Amino acid sequence: MSKTIKVALAGAGAFGIKHLDGIRHIDGVEVVSLVSRDLEKTKEVAAKYGIGHVSTDLADSLALKEVDAVILCTPTQMHAEQSIACMKAGKHVQVEIPLADTLHGALEVAAMQEETGLVAMCGHTRRFNPSHQYVHKQIAAGKFNIQQMDVQTYFFRRSNMNALGQARSWTDHLLWHHAAHTVDLFAYQCGSPIVKANAVQGPIHPTLGIAMDMSIQLKAANGAICTLSLSFNNDGPLGTFFRYIGDSATYIARYDDLFNGKEEKIDVSQVDVSMNGIELQDREFFAAIREGREPNSSVAQVLPCYQVLHDLEQQLNAG
Figure 1 (cartoon, one colour):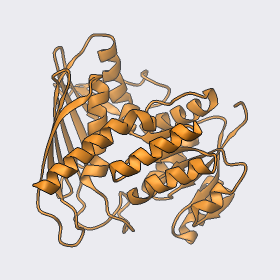
Figure 2 (spheres, one colour):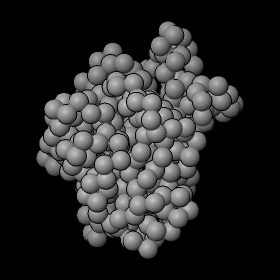
Figure 3 (tube, rainbow, N blue to C red):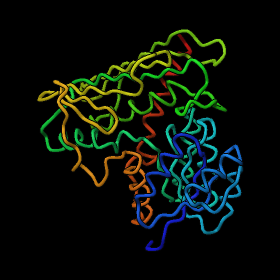
Figure 4 (cartoon, one colour):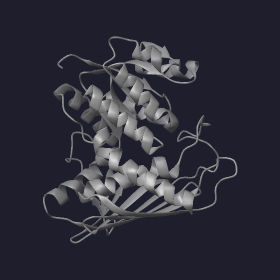
């Protein structure tokens, strides 16, 4: 595909904006349609980014013949159904994390991808952040082996607000959304499947209906372990912080930035063509479309993560 890839983006919230900002730096790609719940706000965003078509219904975008691909930044509960709808319409699809909020949903998306042969990718951004790429390359070169990952995913979300401080139309989830990043990254960095997983959770929030605190332990087949702490109650530094403890070094990753165990910054500016993990994720999606290949973070590659999340959910429900 040598022509411009024309994209529809669904979900003009905090994360949709991040994708629009990233795509601005990618040649040969044009966002031609924007879909979101609030028509007036969507029109404002579309005007800012020069997007010609606006709708509140994804079906309207899928009906546009010129649309080659769709990026879904919609509520978690819609991801599986919308991903399948995109592929049924003949569109390549990148769905933001998580792929689905059930194992059944994830398997259905994978089955549709296999049936259509289209590029279907899930936004496991940690695979693309320069910080984590740096560690991945150290591992691939045989210079570093993970013994343990210690990860903290902390937000202050005692009410249903998004990253921009706006009221959400849906409820976020520590297990099916935020834990998915680390579960996938741990297996990916270790190059070894997860063979043991345990979880405990705190009280269920009376209004939101979700656990606000959770602790997860993982073990990979190669013996590496991971400890993950998650909270929506943390009124402090927000985000996810990864400590890689290995046989030759310690690394601390904070999104696109990387430090050693002594908190000295490591230059990762030459790891890839950008320092923006979202942009790099989008570049991989469009490159896979052009080259007719499976992308890194394809639906098929991330499916084992959702099996682990399903097993953890069963464990939590039983407990």
